Image 1 (cartoon, each protein chain N blue to C red):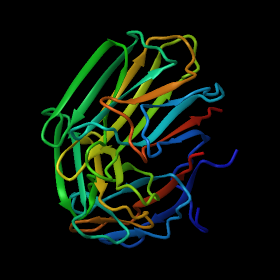
Image 2 (image 1 turned 30 degrees about the vertical axis):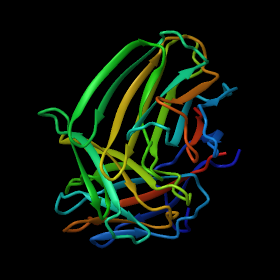
Image 3 (image 1 turned 60 degrees about the vertical axis):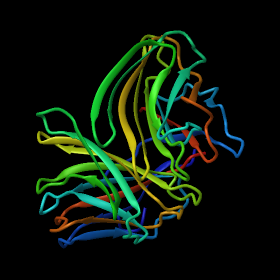
Length: 160
Length: 179
């Protein structure tokens, strides 16, 4: 049985920087899974954009709970990235699913979830209004930096 | 994996069982049949779009062609403006949440985990995360589902709630092995 779910690439941040790009993603899988184990110096959260596209071609929504006050929700439309984590200076773990990332007929959908106990748990869904196959992902923060030691791993899942 | 890199986590034994891509004529439903009993768990991963008149559309499933009132769900839903919870018991279908519909090229995402699907000593638990977002609205749902049956699951049928699945909807079924 051929491997169906396998790691494609891992990047470990050695110098604090505003963004991390993972490029040359092969088109041979059906879905991508991104696992981020990271910190953000300003606690503003991190987003991702694709193929270097920083136009207002993204939308996303989210819901979260911080242990008090019940579940809250919000959205951002016509924005320049899809948020997928609410990082803080304490390392936290997020997983994002990018389905059918290499097809050239549909816009791309992403959803992710993660959290930082005991502060909050959060989930995002978003789309990139492009029919281009995704061949690179850039993770960025609005201000501040992604911390040293942050790890980003991309996995590929291959359907029959 | 690229040379010199190490993975953060090992994926384990995750294998593709079957895939359905909806063709230009659309499909009233998508069904996985003859699901082998050789895995511990199942996962469905899909991009979804149905012929609903408003955005988003919605979806549901049935197992082993069981149309009796043997399903329940419990869900958390949000649309960017408000969040809510809900439940439904003794249903003839298992609701699985939002999918794409009217907006061109815009599909929903769906991941459904089905745990211990071959067990003949307990009811079957489902966990799903579905979402559909366009540039003005959308919805996302976390849900759990229950099928009140001791039968092993051998088939799963997925429906759009208000119409047919549209072209390019893509459904993939995977099996997860245990040691």
